[in-house]
Length: 248
Image (cartoon, rainbow, N blue to C red; front, side, top):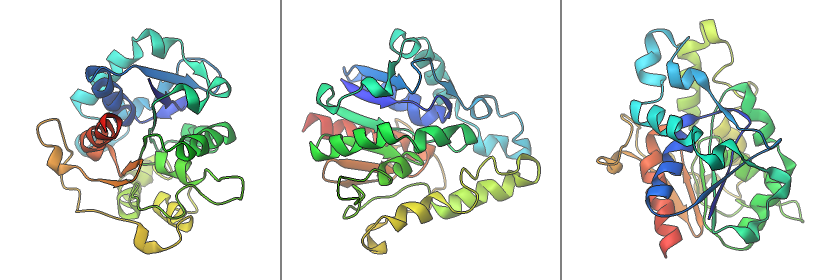
């Protein structure tokens, strides 16, 4: 069984629903969890594109992700999530940390309960996948000595140039919608936890999103039991790399 804790609000539909769909198609059960035990709410703007203006075709979730999210939200496991506080790494085969950029993501990214859980998964060397802002939750997870679990790992996450591009494209009318933490960027904070900046991999320029038939367009980094990726456009490559870890 694979654990996917969800942000109670504003999770990215692509980064949660596509992995959930592919994992279930591969025969794995997916367990969802939220902070309060209530069903999570995706970032609606990513589903309908409202407010994205002329940039809607570029920024909104693709049709496959919208459909996958609708399917996911109808699952009994999704509609009856477990509590973060009831979770134990021992009960699961792997962990997926989705991303999302809207303000409602902050409690998820700052959850001490989830950070302790991440530490346990990493200690047990179980497969862990984190994409986009999910890598920030991963990096904030520190062991008992206060050291981040990614201190000596190679990884990637939402790139500074990707985050700032989306902000500059929409900031005039959406303000800091794309700046989860306006005083820094996801990449800058994640890199602050690394022993060396050389551990961070930007990957090739992201010109198009990947898909089941074009997984080569995506990019992810594997380091031992850890898979990380940058944005929704890497989600198929990311999930299949995670599946490969599960099957090893």
